[in-house]
Image (cartoon, rainbow, N blue to C red; front, side):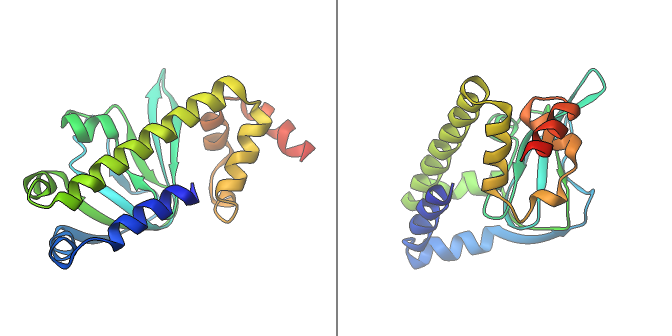
Length: 188
């Protein structure tokens, strides 16, 4: 994932002064407390959130059970992609697992200016490509890796944050029972 973050940072650092200034004008800093929501179910995702610090998770509710689909850590972009792109109500919730600081960009304002600044179009394409790669990796993990390997990959990605995440959220994210997660953790 570091490679992806570096690609984004390299592109952003190459922005000309005018593009940088317009992005600064569109960006607001938000501080949220643990338990606060960036997005509620059935709410339209109208902002993209660049994670400055903290942890958030994306989940949906199925049969009164929360199914965690994604964790957001420092340098991640927290959105419900389908809701943001299609501007339709989200099936998902984005919840802060710790106190969080984000840089928020309003979707409609960004849409109005992105065509005027070619570097912003490059940015949109890069973010979309990287999200597709992440999604493909996630699908591969579920079909080709063991639950133990999926857990080890999560630990590797963000070892400094993992102790902030409830085991029930981790087991849901990994697609395994809490008991299976406990057995995996006992063996490591």
